[in-house]
Amino acid sequence: MKYHLKLAAAAGVAISGMAMSLGTVQAQDTGVVYAGGSAGDGINGYAGGVVALPGSRLGHGFAVRADVNGGDYRYDANGQEISARYFGSDVALVYQTSGKWGWANFSVGPRVTDTRISPIDPANRLRGTRVDVGLQTDGTVGDEWCASWFVSLGVIDLAYITQVRGSRLVDRRSNTQLGLEGGVQGDRHYNRRNVGVFASTRISGKFQGVLSAGGSKQRDRPAKPYVSIGLSRVF
Image 1 (cartoon, rainbow, N blue to C red):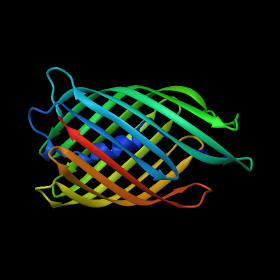
Image 2 (image 1 turned 135 degrees about the horizontal axis):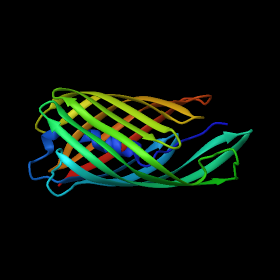
Image 3 (image 1 turned 30 degrees about the vertical axis):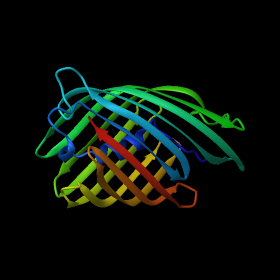
Image 4 (image 1 turned 180 degrees about the vertical axis):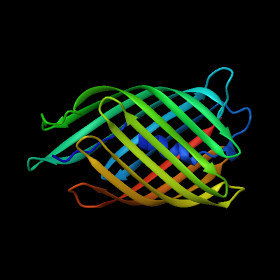
């Protein structure tokens, strides 16, 4: 069997979170909202936000994060094509830290994903409604040359996604960065890798946009192109 896996807005958060730079954050800022999507080996969209708790601010102290996501995909099982649609959400407590070196977040919280499959595939244990505990970390180190990461793990299903990016700041005024990205996601039955390029820039005011494109390869399936877009705003 060949599985596809969508992790409760993980890819979306990676895109938006990595687009945010401390260079765009002011001392009074308390949160960030983001949205976007991707197309390639399936289609998905997401939206969410991070809000600092009282006594904290964006980049320092504790915060809460909430996300929603959804999409559709297909896979082959026993010579038959299976269609699936999913919707997921998660809420997490986030610890934020930052400094001249960059920033990092660490979070934990419940995750719920509902997947509808047609025709029914009894061997797919991810079908129906699944409740999990999500662990996540993301962050950026560096200034003109930056390294960013995103790692998410579902404790019960052992579903994981990792993404890393390396970039060069080409224009400080617009916070424009160009770079490379790569990642891997999967679970006990599934593994998918991707590599591509991305560009991130301030669009207007506190809005930051990011666009990426590349190729992905799932085990035992042909390589396919992908494109993704994300938008975030601090407040």
